[in-house]
Amino acid sequence: MLEKFFKLKENNTSVKTEVVAGFTTFMTMAYILAVNPSILGDAGMNGSAVLIATALASFVGTLLMALLANYPFALAPGMGLNAYFAYTVVIGMGYSWKLALLAVFAEGIIFIILSLTNVREAIFNAIPLTLKSAVSVGIGLFIAFIGLQDAKLIVNSDATLITYQTFKGETFRSVGIGAILALIGILITAILLIKQVKGGILIGILATWILGIICELVGIYIPNPEAGMYSTIPASIVSLDFSSFTETFGAVFTVDFKNFPIGDFVVIMFSFLFVDMFDTIGTLIGVSSKANMLDKEGKLERIRPALLSDAIATCIGAIFGTSTTTTYVESASGVTAGGRTGLTSVVTGLLFLLSIIFSPLFLTIPSFAIAPALVTVGFYMMGSVVKINFDDMSDAIPAFLCIIAMPLAYSISEGIAIGVISWTLINLITGKAKEKKISALMYVLAILFVLKYIFL
Image 1 (tube, rainbow, N blue to C red):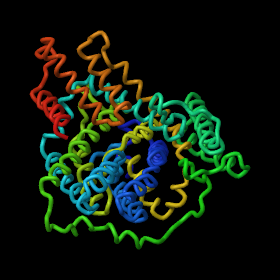
Image 2 (cartoon, one colour):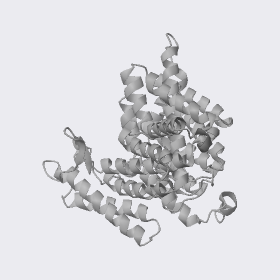
Image 3 (cartoon, one colour):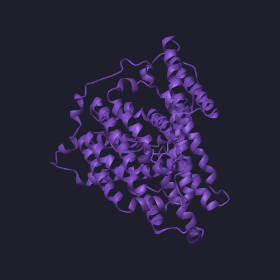
Image 4 (cartoon, helix red, strand yellow):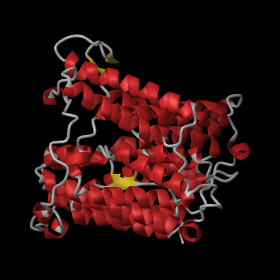
């Protein structure tokens, strides 16, 4: 049955490989179960309710991706979008979190309409192959950078913006030890992958976590919540109290429309839409490129159902009570572990559903244990750089700008914007428009990106 539905042999995979890949994807995404409640909690939302909403939205969205598109891509409330939700819309602009959820829901409706037409598919196909390769590389660097930060190996610095961990001072027994464990985890993961051990990334996560538990038990590692370093030992395993979910479920439909700020609402909604659209497209490009799912023209065969799954998940997530649900770049970890079909997504989705019950256990996985997986995935995604023709400067320069913009601007969509604008302008000004066959849609995208920087 699984073979027939997910076409495992056709995709050169097996049930075992897909299950391991699904576990791996979930383990690299599980941090959202801790981070999202924290961020949206700052907006006045109940943290426990947000955790349940996050898990349910991730389960539904990922299952939709599996059943509609048969791709190993997982979905969850997006990082960056949740920060915009909490710190810009609610705290900065002073609007209620219910209105922010309504904006997310409205954005999702528009997203569904665009997904049912050729608009989003046309945007995906209009981006030249060289930029698609650059997006994959840029995402790789971005993921690795996030991993290094999560492990506290890279930290903020007043003098140089960022710097490496010094491994000394008052926080050494927490931050320093965590960083060292992350380095050991990277080494373990690298050895496992070189030895071609199946599920090496997942084993690396678990091994690093176990080492953390041992270090805490013997007193080498001392948790320090103020420094973002928490206990590696679960206080409990299960929780069956779901009553808090009633605070966010359906709250999107209880917005008070008296003195409704229609002008600001439209701007907020389109801001969500803009970032969500290009984060999703960028993620699909990067992950599918890593899995060699793009055809010779750089097109993804089942792009429409994949985009539709993402759009529906956004609406459902808003109803549950969470910020924009989107395709996750960490899906690349499952792809790296061998995932090639929707069975990977089914496993990931079911784990998100189970995480509602086992939330105390999953929330205990330390960030330094997840970091080795993110760094390793970043390394794998760097491989797409060989697909860029560096002898053709009109392709190479925009690709380079796209790559460096993602980690430096801390945004996938910003990297795409810089890549599209620079590729279009450089080839237009140098008289290569006909040679490169610049489509009308690329001109439109370039103009829209420029207007975004002017007005948003």
